[in-house]
Amino acid sequence: MKRKTIETADVSQLVEDAQELMTATAHIAEDKVMAARKRLSGAIQNGREVLENLKNKAIDGAKATDEVIREHPYQSIGVALGVGVLIGILLRRRN
Image 1 (cartoon, rainbow, N blue to C red):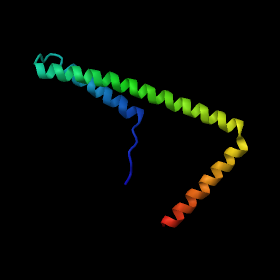
Image 2 (image 1 turned 90 degrees about the horizontal axis):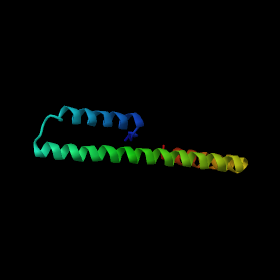
Image 3 (image 1 turned 90 degrees about the vertical axis):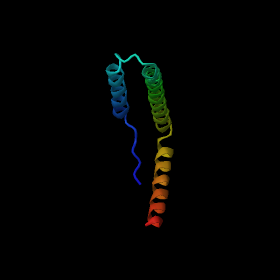
Image 4 (image 1 turned 120 degrees about the vertical axis):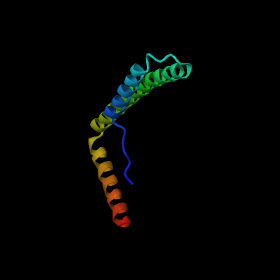
């Protein structure tokens, strides 16, 4: 079963769609619609914050990984080779 990854473009499109929905329902003054718009607005803001936090964590992780690899290049090559061999063995057994 393939897993679909969430892309930044997908999240951006979702935010755009949600904002279009809010604009389209701006003239409706019913209580339920107004409450839903308020929740949607909060969810959009929360989603933006979560996305920004994830991006920052990914960047920090990449920087830390780069630093470790630069400090220990030969050990990094050894670990990568070992992991590759292990994955190869596991995949071979599976087939």
